[in-house]
Image (cartoon, rainbow, N blue to C red; front, top):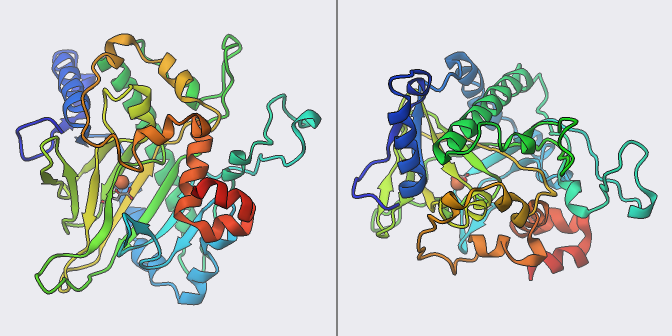
Length: 382
Ligand SMILES: O=C(O)CCC(=O)C(=O)O
Ligand SMILES: [Fe+2]
């Protein structure tokens, strides 16, 4: 962040529909993108009942018996979808004091382990690359344990997908490029698009619970999730449930800014791929979550990670960005971080799929070894 303010901007999306307020809205969005990289949006158009229908099921989802949760374990899924138990994930060498379910756009498996020369009967595209194996269906909880979950999740997914596409159009406008420039990443190509036909991406949605946890002797709250940049996609739309604070955002002076839940809003931030696409002009801002203290209520959150086509490469994505945007690159103090954009620009993982595969293998080597084998796992762990 590069702002002297101690709080994040709140943008009102209804202003974007008002001819009088639109210019001001776009200039605020431009500032938020280039100076801060983290913002709230309100009047976003997602129906309150679409949100509350899913939110109201979260306690039951997490209260399932350990056997029921184990039956949905990520260990069952080559797509890294499913349940991860409390404190099973590690960020920056420390356990994250949260449990979570990873869901995604419901899609069939398209990975084809056949040799590329054989092609596939249905498509000219080569789906033999290992990263295509990341795509696949969800593990749904049983309807007797969490009644109505699949419908509530799907409605929420569809609403957030639409919001994310509309928001990308506003980003295009604030960049001064034609509305729809990035649509090619998200929709089946039209007959005129002969450059590259992308398979519409799978978006990921995490359902997260941070239970109350003991503070250290000095009263310091535990690590809900350690400081990180989002690496699962293009843009993140985070819904913070309830009133429990926890999310913090690192500004450009190295100061942590609290990003409390604000009723009726989503928090929007940008992933590594967006930072790479803009050559660092829009930052994937570092953030973290503090676990609730011992007498607090559990905190729930729902980040939606907008996906991108897995075969999209960094240079290809950059070619869609105008020089006026890429030229706004800012100096960054975090270029040497392990999870920073630099790993995405390493030619070995230069497609989104390669960088995603690496990320998932590194965060779940046990799942990776089971489905991808030791040799592949070791390669991506190096
Ligand atoms: O729970 C939150 O508020 C944020 C979680 C987060 O940053 C993430 O899962 O990437
Ligand atoms: Fe995050």
